[in-house]
Structures are given as structure tokens and as C-alpha cells.
Length: 111
Image (cartoon, rainbow, N blue to C red; front, side, top):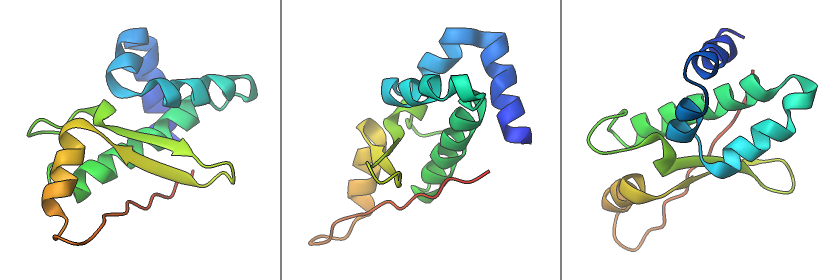
């Protein structure tokens, strides 16, 4: 996949600095577990794409104070991916959510 190759290239060029700026510790641990199967770059690429989609859904793109690590993708025991937001992204989501309602973020990951 092209996106996987671009993430792999960014990791090759910028190493741990890139990883630490973009991905949560949990995302990095998941990717490292999948490295043996040759899936590390693909795992990170899918999470990168989900973060971009989340930032756009929040109406910001990657500007206005949102940080890559304000959004994190993990998996439930069933394998279902879930998105958690913290920091500025959580504040933005709360501001967008009507009073008396709870926001739910759905995410799908695919190659």
C-alpha cells in the first residue's frame, strides 16, 4: 500500500522523533508486536489515516492546536478498532456535542 510506504519512509527518515510525535505509546507497542509479520508500517499507516479522518471530523484538520497524539487508535479484545481522544481533540469533541448527548467515535481500519 502506498500509504504504508510513505509512513515507512517517514520512519526511515525521522526515526523515533517521528514515531514519538505522531503515535501514542500504545499504538507503537501494537505496531512493534506486528513487526515480525512485516506489518509494522501498515499498522502505523492505518492509524495515521484514522487520525487524519478524526481531525477532519472534528472540523480542524491538523491545525488549531490539535496534535497527532491527541488521537489514539487501539483495539478491543474482539479486534474492533476504537479511537480515543485527549487534550485539545477531547475539548473540541465536547464542544461539538449537544448538551445531554454523548459522542461516540466509530473507526474502521482497512488496507
